[in-house]
Length: 267
Ligand SMILES: *[C@@H]1O[C@H](CO)[C@@H](O)[C@H](O)[C@H]1NC(C)=O
Ligand SMILES: *[C@@H]1O[C@H](CO)[C@@H](O)[C@H](O)[C@H]1NC(C)=O
Ligand SMILES: *[C@@H]1O[C@H](CO)[C@@H](O)[C@H](O)[C@H]1NC(C)=O
Image (tube, rainbow, N blue to C red; front, side, top):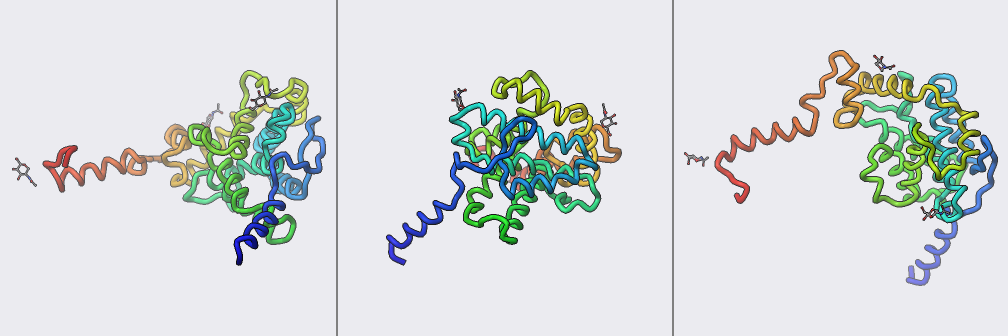
């Protein structure tokens, strides 16, 4: 293909990719204007299962989306910079790995819940694309990576800090949702409406139960993460020793000293 040909193909592909500031169809939930595209509706449908089984999680997912959307709506610059459809899908699906059903389609043994959630969200979008419910060009690899990064790094604030703004806003919204002093980014009226529609009465107790469950049911996916502390505190027989990076490093250290006893830092 000639160079000019490549350029025109790229321009075409670019035109189909969701641009920050894209105007999407919207609806209003708890007084907050939110994106109302097919994929956002389908993401909402996907988490309906939690409404009965883990209602604190269901409300947490809604509040995370709505608090983030309210903060973005209140700032014209941010509203035009952040991809609001990506934000919606990312926040709504950010804790699929909290699923406590024994046959969960999203929870693995080996991976931490943040990774399970990120993988599950990307798979969900890929399935939507495969069944022609949304466009593969719009959900290109770059957008999927931002979705994955935002979800999988949700508890790694020191890493997300230097990532792109799209991934950061998935994480920022999780932060806005945690109880504490009201964040001035969210208009007072929105705060009140969101909390009235999705009350936050049980999130800490609910996450205590979920994190303990995950440490007990998938210990491999909990070592070297903060879930390890829930395992140590609450799961009988839970023992991370031998799995922690500290232990793994010390095992290597002993073998190294035996093999090269006289080496120095300058060897
Ligand atoms: C909107 O957000 C941007 C980026 O965080 C910030 O620099 C700006 O001060 C905000 N504007 C208002 C009016 O709050
Ligand atoms: C937190 O979870 C553990 C394990 O289920 C339980 O023993 C403890 O009572 C819980 N704490 C509260 C305050 O609910
Ligand atoms: C290490 O040093 C000691 C004392 O100088 C020496 O006896 C020993 O043979 C050395 N070991 C090796 C593996 O070089």
